[in-house]
Image (cartoon, rainbow, N blue to C red):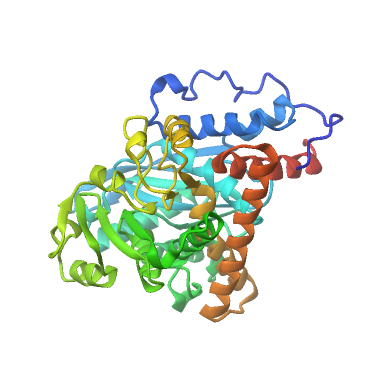
Length: 443
């Protein structure tokens, strides 16, 4: 692990984003503030590195933040005003990359945290990106198709001052999908006067999207689970799995693990789920959902809550829902051997300390769910060169990159004698810091 040269000029300790900046969340604000958690994780990891204070302060806060309020014409002809954000955490290693989520729970602190985690995720995967994130405070299920399109196109216009294939490349996240990305790409292209597919990733294949992108986060999670099991000497054919969050990520993980012989014993969504010790077929659950059912009323299984699922005796627990699911209040009840963080920030720093004492093997989020941004990078590259690979080539590249990153985290953890999360963050932070030092401080 390299260190920053002592001769590097320091950034002024009078930085407007100093470590003691009062408007940044502190731990006293509670363990469920996502940005506070991101900062706590950063501070813990960076304490192992020999970085100058100014470098640390620069990496600790966002590069830029954009808050927008914009009107949308509803189908009733009423005009409603919505709040949106786009945050760039770092541009040191390249253009920013990060999803856009539509949710009533979106806050600026949440977007800040997700942008920071994206920086570390991209650096960990050795992708030429910095981290970004965006969001609109809205429940997309409450909008008609045309209202959703109008909101998306107006939000895209508002953030277009930051967006671009060489500056900031959005992608889908919670509450958004490939259709939303298509509208954003089209809106940006209309402003420029010609088609620019590389401005977003996660698009439909018909307009420059990549094969394998929709399943990429789930497939990447599966790769890390199998690598962890190999490291622990566990036999997948005898393993049980519980999946919290049976959405785009969780359902793919459930299907891929089921297809290699692992037993899916429980799945949940935001409103609850089901458990069957003899095993569930995730394909049957998906057909039930497609028929208008909900996870929690799937027949032939016992209804459970999300809290129940976290406490199941299983080999692998996949946390693929939202942030702050495993906290100091329930971490001691987690009984899985492996915790795979398919979501961003599902475990709080306080919970991490408890999980250490129980010996659970944690696959941290910036490693576990990095498959999405990895294939987004491959999509971006394909768009830039107008040359596309078949899906088996995409999956091979994903497998190679995820396995390589997993091994790098294990090596870093052994070197510093720290947890998997600390190791992943140490490795990522060092790479970004090294790039910053090599580039120099402008002017």
